[in-house]
Length: 461
Image 1 (cartoon, rainbow, N blue to C red):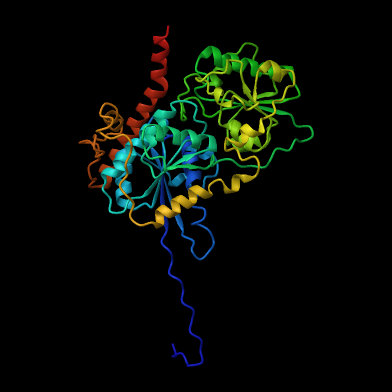
Image 2: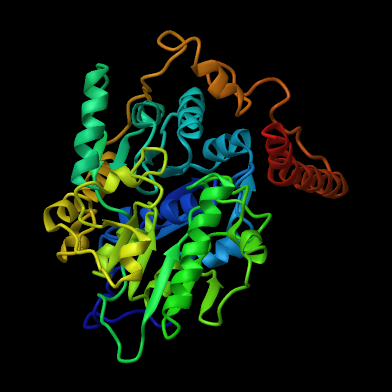
């Protein structure tokens, strides 16, 4: 190459590639996977932007092995979350902690039940990393039970997301009431709200009942709701009536479903009318064609309200804490099948809606700004202080050890003897281990999902 002459311009320096922001999402069910993956995207959206300061963002998807670990079908049905389902892997709690130790994550999103969050907080703390990740957690939807228990199990994370101003106020009150630091509580919104605002279509009349795996729990109550839904279809033969289901028999979601509506429908006297269908799929796609959303207390009601779709919360089985529909007191949405059969359409109370993080007023685009700014400040602020959960072996010696033991951790957060898999020394041994592990996992799920419910029902006879 000839030397450059004095009149030739110096080539512009190529800016050094910015290091990738490494994020891990650990989830224990299909709905928590959806929440965790979308939360990670919203918290890192600014970092992944197109400007000069943008970071590439690498998200690792990890599923905590257990009774509700989602199947590939469930992962695909969750919808677009920005992470290829083929790149999601299943881990134990100890394997996850080893991954955190070895892979140098900047941000960890714990999309787990409260006990799982507490175990991972202590496990990460016990790693004594010279540079630990920022840890974020929160709730998938409406918090209507075990408020204090769930919140204190999540205490110690750097950010505890609240889905609304209402929840943020309650969360801070719980932490301050026990003398715990409440600064981690950060108001945001449900990360999966979206879709076009409701527009009625000529000739379309679709009612969707959003089923829940564990609400109501009894056979009599679930059969009642199914019967009323089918009767509604018969009363309105030109109306399409859909039963939106979360999982297929044998699959599990965040909550155990011992009496699937699919099986109850097969035994319903008189069969099913032609305008009645059972549907699966992404909730957002179902809402695209919904003219009335009916449920007992599903978070789908908040998705529906966000899009201004007519929404009804059933009172047929009472307004009770065990059903979760008490959360909607004051919403203007409480009604019964009798009224819906007669043509009633509830009108939401605007003040109530404004406090629930539904963001139907168009403010959803900025709902994560505060949380994103907090995470960015933590990432840029140098070495983080040690994680300090409210529960410790000193403050909860009769409670914490049992929670940690369920995840094969000792009271100090370190793995119990035998919890870590031995180092593999060959491909054949690894293949044998994986085969045995898969068989054991299948047997475990069969026991939890099929055998245990039968035993419980026999005990009720």
